[in-house]
View 1 (cartoon, rainbow, N blue to C red):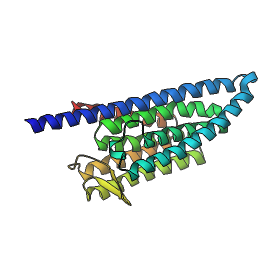
View 2 (cartoon, rainbow, N blue to C red; view 1 turned 180 degrees about the vertical axis):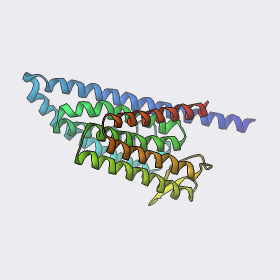
View 3 (cartoon, helix red, strand yellow; view 1 turned 45 degrees about the vertical axis):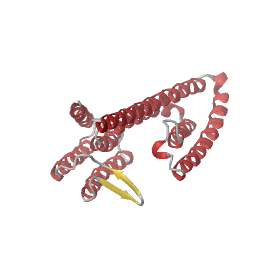
Length: 258
């Protein structure tokens, strides 16, 4: 009985840690988006346009310094073995937030109008993927990563023609093929894929049938190809079907958590 209580307390502490980390990521994304919104508004006003450019350049250097500082912090955590028991605010989090800010600012410097459309989607999606990573079975996270990328490719194929659509579709089909190969590799190692000394867990359920993975990614690749050849408006219908599939999977894995 006492051993069960100790295990229960450890599980509760870990769940609290994950909840705090998820909240920190969502709060960080909201702060970054709020700051970028003020920056975008400054670009839209003639009297503050040049000040916005200067602010962007300064923030780029500050966020680049944050990336370097976060990397050094992470290296220190690894060296002293603090990484496994580090608090929510640690070197990894500092590096990730600095990278997100740096990438956002560089995109704004390139084209602040396009950056609005990209970042208002990309940053919340990244926060949601982090939530999935912390809360759901690893196979659902793997599925989300691949299919979010595929949905983006289908959206590009629906919106554009020519080289951009072709490259997007080829990348999406490569992602589907790579996902199957990674699954087959992980199946031999208990759900893990090794990259040097780093082990990446792709799925928790060791009873996943290979034919299921082949079917999911095979059908997905066929839908991507169909979206390319049929183009709009049929490509949008395929995009909605892929999005609906993700929603259905989200409901399925949420029910498994209960």
